[in-house]
Length: 152
Image (cartoon, rainbow, N blue to C red; front, side, top):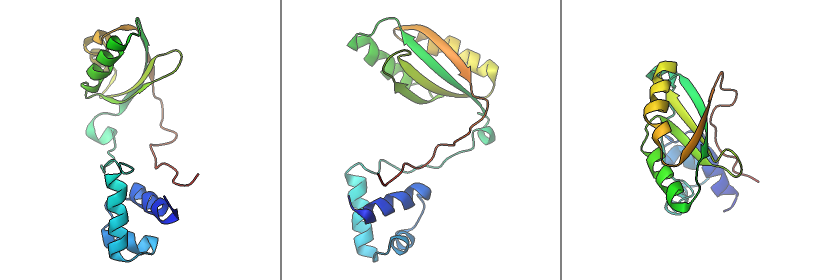
């Protein structure tokens, strides 16, 4: 990956709706080489997709909770079952397996505390292998999800 590829990545992270013409202008390439490089970055999996970033409050999901999950057992079958089940819960917007304690960290979007309570009681508490859930309410977003740095 060279400096032009890194610049392409920076530009599409900032605005995934750029036309190929706009992108080529911004990175200083002609249309065909820019298009070829973009397609290579997509086909290699470096660019995994494009999506719109929504305002959670505008869609009625302004209540966010970080949930630490400690597992009762950590055998492969249980962990795979937990991970498969957590992927099926739409309110879980992010899930990460961690080293140490807790075992997982989940980010959950809900309308309010009552709707979160239902998600925890009816879905999260029933996930395979869960010993303990610890919920922390997000007070304020200090750094919004942002683009990855493209230069080391």
